[in-house]
Image (tube, rainbow, N blue to C red; front, side, top):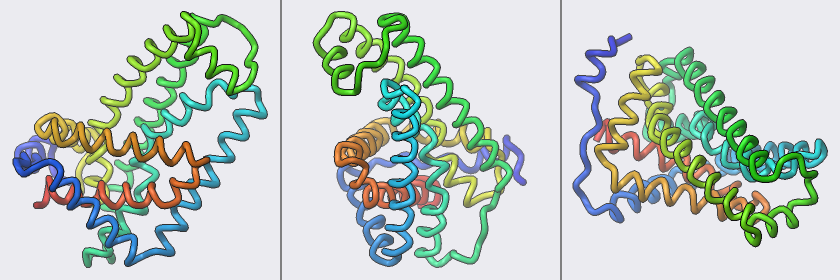
Amino acid sequence: MQTPENTLASSKARIVDAPIGGVVSRWLRCALRDFRTYPRLSVAYGLGLFIAGWVLLVALWRFGLGWMILPTLAGCMLVGPVVTIGLYRISRRAQGSGGRGVASPGQVLLAGTILMVFALTWLRAATLIFAVFFGLLPFTGLLETLITLLSTPRGIATVIFGTITGGLFAALGFAISVFSIPMLIDREVDCFTAMALSFNATTHNFGLMIVWAALITASVTLGVLTGLLGLIFIFPILGFATWHAYCDLFKG
């Protein structure tokens, strides 16, 4: 395994100076090609996410935690890069390197643990924000809660504070994970070095990665609004595209 010093010195991402729209379009075209090459695996992966998502939503509802549905969905995005490991391997297979296993399996597990703790910390923060503004009021239903959040002063304050806090969590989580998980699949490198390289790549390609993060957020939001059905197709495509983004910045 490479030392952190050597890896950081030799493996920093390139700075992309091409038009952002063209770069993102290329990643998506490559992702669609992978989807067409392995349609059954892709749909199976998306279907698994769809089922797991509904199990989680029903569990929250049954335990009277319906108000946590939206924060939980946001938290799931923080651990999304770990869930897409299989998709990264499918894309790598499509590139002709399918025989290779995960280069740093132990480090992938460590990264997943870190991201899980990160997501749980966000959920705790969301709980505290809700409690500060609403106290111990009982959950009256998702629709009623949404109306309260969007039409009352304390509801709007909750949305503002929650959005700011969630945005900070999302930005940091995205920066450290978007390329670190693909890198741990591809290279023998430790988790913290991979996260540092991912953060470096994100900050040095700031405009590009803002657009990419916004596209991911918009796509996932669209998938959620379809009752998670859209995620059956959106999730695999985003996973494939993220692998090609990694290859473009670190291996291009």
